[in-house]
Image (cartoon, rainbow, N blue to C red; front, side, top):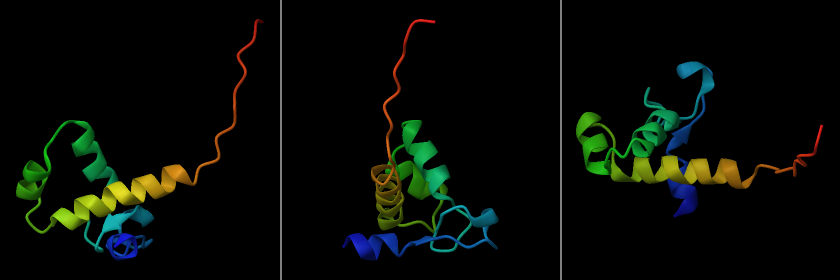
Length: 81
């Protein structure tokens, strides 16, 4: 299921300068995440973008999770100056 969802994300330098987008459309993962962060419901997003499917929103969230989980986090020590 994970692989199937991630196949919905396309990175193509010819589309939105290579930003990850949904199924090659000009709807970026970033736009979907921003809308969800603004507490816009999935139903409202699907109404605003009728070409999207529920699986596209799931794919955007999974893609973001994959990117974040692959980050290397380095501890930062805050000291007195």
